[in-house]
Amino acid sequence: MSSTFRNKRASRGSIITGALVAGVAALSLLAPSIGAAGNNPPGANGTVKVDGVVFDTAPDNQPHVGCSFQVDFYGFDQGAYNATVDFAVQPPSGKFAPLLTDSVFIGQDAAGGGTDLDAERTYDLTSQLAAFDAHPKQGYHVKLTVSAPGADGKIATKHKVFWTNGCVAPPCDGEIDPYTGACYKS
Image (tube, rainbow, N blue to C red; front, side, top):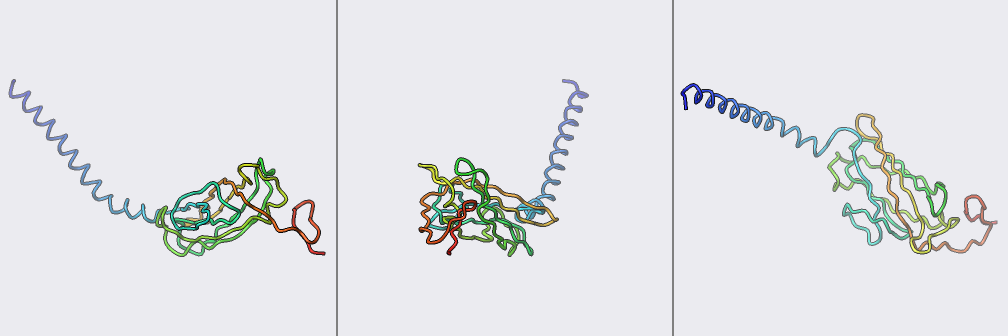
């Protein structure tokens, strides 16, 4: 092998080694900011989970629950933020009819990721579902929509579709509204 060839080969190896060292050094400088953003990323953060009885704080989603269930809110931004919570019945139980709207405060701490519980709210849709038809095996098909403002003015919109079962409304001792199914005492 000629000495010119060996010098070119050694020079190429030095360049590759130098580039690798420079790349590792650049990544190590960026690592602290990447880690910080991972714990509290900017923007509209968060996720919601539907939790059946027995209630817990584990961030799991249960798509088949009773009429009494919780919605858990995880990883939302810190600030004066309230999430709008909307429930609607959907086919085969009904044609996208609204059931309930609520507001939940979610901004007590910085966005801490998918296991950072910010809020939980218990709901019972028994009376709201009384006017609709339950599927014989699954129960009622319900869609949850959560709109949550966050940092930078962004709105995080989250959806969950789930089934509720075992909803038995007490008998109405008044008049039933044919449009909403609500019971009004005379």
